[in-house]
Amino acid sequence: MLKGFKDFLLRGNVVDLAVAVVIGTAFVAIVTAFSNGIINPLLAVFGDNNDIGLGFRLVADRPATFVQVGPIITAGINFLIIATVLYFVLVLPAMHAKKRFGTQDSSVTDSEVLVQIRDLLADSQQSAGGRHEF
Image (cartoon, rainbow, N blue to C red; front, side, top):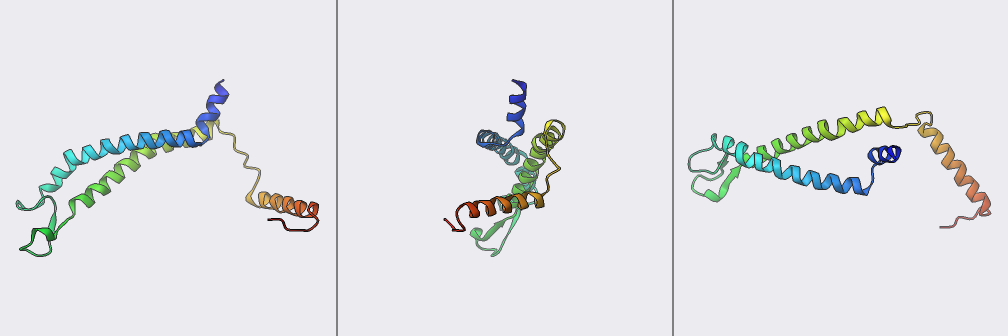
């Protein structure tokens, strides 16, 4: 029973991916709320009183020409927060678990696998009488 559970944890499949997407979506909502509540007001300190947030106007008379730099900085900070948490909470522990519990057969090289594929293809062509069936 525990071996099956270990195999499930260490193998990637569609269910694992679905769970990761749901958890990732929930985490993005948390980080977005953090950014909107804390980071955006901090970036707005550097903007003018008449403008919304950090940025600059291309044409002084037209408010529609305001280029917002704050959302770009916020998106970069969001990305760094999400990437850091995912790496240290999911990727790093999974790598350690695979090293500790995973069974990797490192004796087979890529070249050996390619040779085996070549031999199988040659055998299948000989059994088909040299014909190519597609």
